[in-house]
Image (cartoon, rainbow, N blue to C red):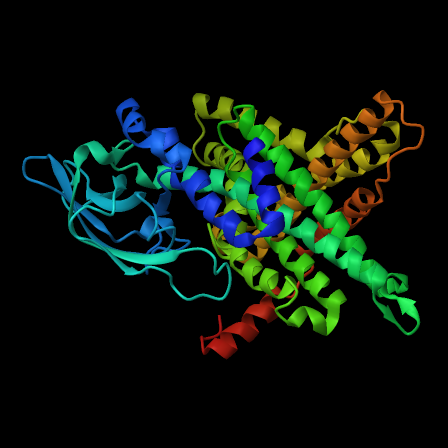
Length: 483
């Protein structure tokens, strides 16, 4: 939580600085903190935590972007087993040319399985012979204050003591680190969104056109209201997700993925709205919005593209109910006493989700109507997921348009739950403090209303859509044969 609050404040002011700090603290040294041995931590951490040395996280390659499992850099063990020889290139690595310690992912042979390899994490220093910086600062569109580099490793000998975590478990380490980094990613985006909102409000209240300030025009009010609603939701989601991690939740993959997709998409919209309110002046470099627009664009790509994470959210989220349906189906095909017991449990779980409207507890009376609406939408979501799994079965794994709607509904359900939780806490705090006037929660109320509407639209789109026409048009343009 404290880390997120710090990065939110940095994100309010400079995206480059927030990315630099995030690359060092949230992912650069995170693998060492989570998976390092006592000896490794004693050796590397003291200078890294004080900032005397900087860390970097090197996963991305030409063929390994969002497909993290496709790492091609090799690490070949020496004959005496004392070290590994690393060969390959990494690119788009933040802090690459200024870091003193890099967590590098490379492919190692699996013992006893000839020809099979797995990803292993290594601690590498740039003073190792054969380590070469190819580009210290790659020219780029935004976050130009960061040193995004490209480096090669040519027969670099890395001691076996520098293996981080179990050999062959580098992919798990990488994904765990990225899960944590996505939380602070959300905090950075929240800070930037709040700055955009402040800039938009200030300009709208002072800029006059047609003898009125911009703040008197409804279309401008619409933009500012949506910006305020989204900023409130981004803040609530970041806080809830960070608190889940602080409280020891072991598996937070879906929550951090939802936070990353939601906050990066919302920030992009918020920056654009602030840009539009400022008009032509925003296009010039004397205002920060031109830079903020360029800086914000990478967020939907970095640390897992939003399209990949959208499918991930849907598929991982549906894995539980999908396995229960599979248990029921397998039992019907090949009955046995053991399977019947498991199928009965799975069937009762699915039946409960289909007929029971969940209770969303709130302490504030004025929020109970919203809580009941949210509960009904959760029930509708459960029903829609069940129906999609029964209708499509295994092919749903490749049906990304269906996945997008399920993930979209899930993200808005999570966002609404976070907003309602925070809103309830704020109402209760005001009462305990004896405030006579209730706090203004119009932005939160607007978010809930618009979020509920989006959820209904996502769920409705599962059965009423133009997917066939859309895919036919795309295939035609791409020169693919009709199916």
